[in-house]
Amino acid sequence: MNKSNLFRFIRLSVGAVCVCAVLFGGLPVRADDLKPPTVAIVNIPWVVQNAEATKSIQRAVEAQRQPWAKEIADREEKLRSEEQELNRQRNVLSSDALTSKRRDFETKVADFQKNVQGKMRALDQAGSEAMNTVSSNLQQIVAEVAQEVGASLVLQAQAVAFADQSTDVSKTVLERLNNKLPQVSVKLPKK
Image (cartoon, rainbow, N blue to C red; front, side):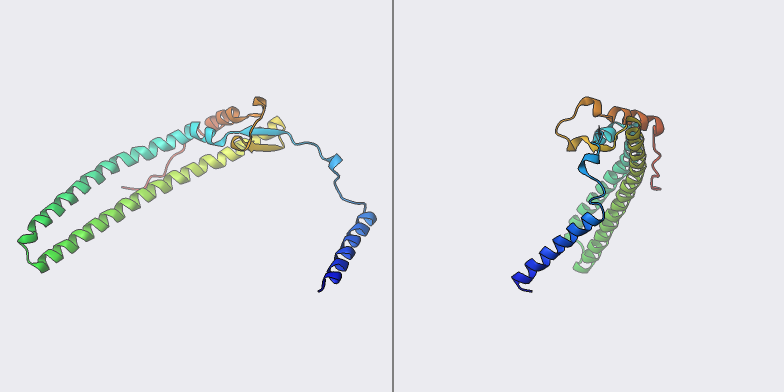
């Protein structure tokens, strides 16, 4: 298609749109008909950080992590001692025996690392699932508060450069979240 045909096509298209607009009454909504949105502001990170449910999740996860940390430290110490003993035996053992013991030791280390990673991954997953409960309840509460204050638009505080304090519903949202969800059980992995 050359330039003149392209311009002709564009003119015909614009003309067709104008004819349709005249025949069918123009645009369905005019700018004059729109009412300005009523805005509410909520500081989601602040609410999540200060929510009792979040704190209960953090306590549960940390209570599980601490005994594991001690267990891990003890096992690491045993592995270090075993490695030192293996290094001392370097001059005593034959090359084949040393290679075999070294391979066995490396297998123990790899199994230990896999075990630790699996436990930590399971613990992180349990914490994430519990936080999903907080998040879904938080969304519901924000929607309820917005409806109650007549807000047609809710913005996160981080996206707003300036807003009147009267539009901030963060404290109300936090209070409702704490009342509705004072704590969340964390389905911790079995030891």
